[in-house]
Length: 437
Ligand code: COA
Image 1 (cartoon, rainbow, N blue to C red):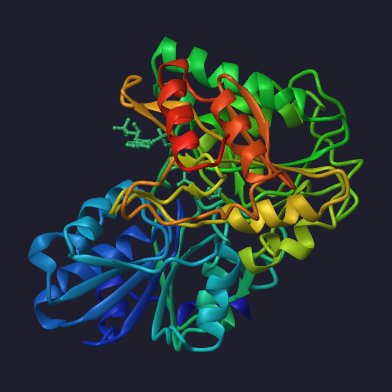
Image 2: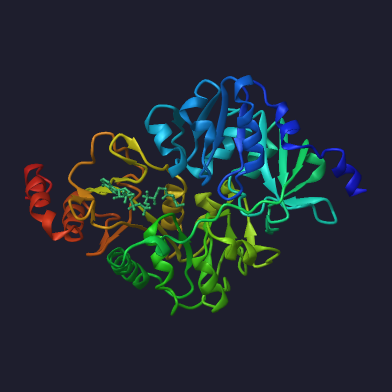
């Protein structure tokens, strides 16, 4: 029964991508779900195609469709800017949509972004004909469900991850069988110097003091959230409700620190949406009933996040002014990343009973030459997290608690956690602005 439904859809990548027409909106599976064979075949057709809009979140593979020689053939539209498309966005060869991760899927559902073709990367079908979206549910499942055509790259190396994370083969239009390794991303910790490690550890140690036993954790992207995992080894009964799952969580699960038993929303389950990690983690997730992947519009919905008591969100930022406005997606006018789930989780954790929303960043950048705590955000540095949303800010000099505090109290608290070399200048400016008197 299932093989016949399956077999007549099987095509080569070259045959399948012929369905793409000039002017189409094409979605690519995100993160380590990048459908490499399909993307290669699509890019090889570039001479026949014009103005194909290519949408995706973070991916790690070379983005050939965003290379200068692809101009006019493909237009990349980033829903989150990763390193592989940053240059293209900042050189004006690709575009960017600033949007909360929890709200992207609604753009597909309402056809504000009207998807023609979704190219996804799935596990082989089970005996009932269901394929798993594996390592990357995020916005990809909803993108496929709201696309006119679905081309699936089916790979025995894609883990079968549980949750609201499946599609039946009857819904697929083309099936391309591959046997390819998934894109792996090591922990930031594996690639940094000893002094950076010491810096991140200092910040992580302050954060870990704020984590009570029985808390539910979200860890965002970057070196600091990764470092925090190393400081949670002595905690008890932690739960996980996070958009991103990573290698660092495996040790905490295996040692029993993370057991999800005290979670007040979906207890007994790790709830996540995608993974940025290595094969060790992909193998760990395969057929693992402890892990439940769901779409970002569920996982990142601030109202769902807030159903977890003692919800702790840990995210990072690039620059924060001393009133509490945080820019996390650009360095001045240069776009760096995106909103992702930062505001979703800050709002969810802030509403959670006993919750704490933490933004953590080193006090300086560029070998101590630039303060990341500033009196005024750089021109072009837009606000990701507003001063009404911000709660806790951590640097290597401590933690500032800003929620419900006056401008004067905030300025003092932020100067307290700035690097000593910049405190005098910040204070001088605060007096000039009449924020301190
Ligand atoms: N001025 C100039 N350069 C700065 C800077 C500043 N104020 N702040 C940082 N930089 C530079 C750093 O020196 C570094 O440069 P390098 O790559 O040449 O070393 C680069 O910008 C990245 O900074 P870093 O602090 O190392 O970033 P990170 O990898 O720890 O990630 C964010 C931090 C903020 C970029 C990342 O967390 C993010 O994109 N957040 C927004 C989305 C989000 O929070 N989503 C929710 C969780 S999934």
